[in-house]
Image (cartoon, rainbow, N blue to C red; front, side):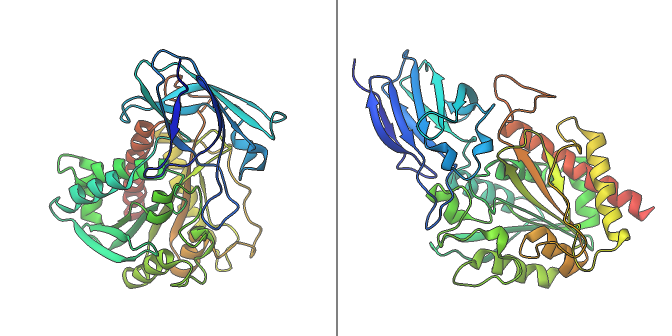
Amino acid sequence: MNDIRIDSAFDSGNIEVLSVDGASAKLAIPKDTHSDFKQWFHFRVAGAAGRELVLMITGLEQSAYPGGWPDYDACVSEDRDYWGRAVSSYDKDADGGTLTIRYTPASDIAWFAYFAPYSMERHHDLIAEAASSEGVDHVHLGTTLDGQPLDCLEMGEGRFNVWLYARQHPGETQAEWWMEGALEVLTDPADSVGRELRKRCRLNLVPNCNPDGSKRGNLRVNAAGTNLNREWENPTAEKSPEVLAIRNHMDKTGVDFAMDVHGDEAIPVSFLAGFEGIPSWTDEQGERYYRYEAILDRRTPDFQTELGYTKSAPGRANLSMSTNQVAERFGATAMTLEMPYKDNKANPEPEQGWSPERCKMLARDCLASLLELIETQDS
């Protein structure tokens, strides 16, 4: 039989083909643009119907997060709509660390990715649909280094300023799936959570903070090779125009509540990271964050508080990171939401693992928790 064909020359595609033999292939992940980060992959395999594919991605002990590969199953789709999981195994001693993906597609073409991709075309559909909804304003925040627009959606009649922004790290596509779920809640006139939030808040949403990195197939950086979530203290037009544009607009609107949405490679659960360690920390500001965290923990089994990042010591917060900078700059209740690439062992879903659908459902729980926080705060 003929050898399979592997391609990645499309939006967010990223793989290097080292060799192909029948239905088996040895692959590697190229580095991000002007960067040593590498972790995101997205490619298609043709000529595969009815054949067991054995796809070996090598050199992963030198990837950005080697801890992301054990107990991880690659995402796979045959229609680019439903994304399931392909059985995968990791051997850290084989070819510098090898993830072996095994899958037998029913159709002739199958797509594989680190997580379900969120294309720039889908992003533009999301923006167009939301912007055409009643009461939603579109704001062009600026232009990226590759000439793409940086989109912001604003809505609501209240004075409580909420900022939701996602995908500073473009390979964390969970974040824009979350944004799609959030916008469905906020733009649906029949959704009581969305209606109440729009009465009480002015909401500002940036569904994709890094369009260039998204299109280029990067894990973590923009077109200049810059990690945007280390630019919030001193953003520049040359290295981080995306952060500069977002922060400038925040200065105009003010920020009372902010959530920066991400994905985490190694920790197999959803969790929040706060702003402990900022110079202006007060127990009152911190208590609002901890109250929100407790509300979200109570509302959904897809969130937990036991696992997460180590809290910064007093006065030692990294102010180049958005959550710390926003909390310090505005006195806001700020946080980073992290979602997994792996499945949650305590609440598993064998066919899909953590999925776009679960990202979107978590978004509704996050918004409902925000509404509860505001209601209890007002009372």
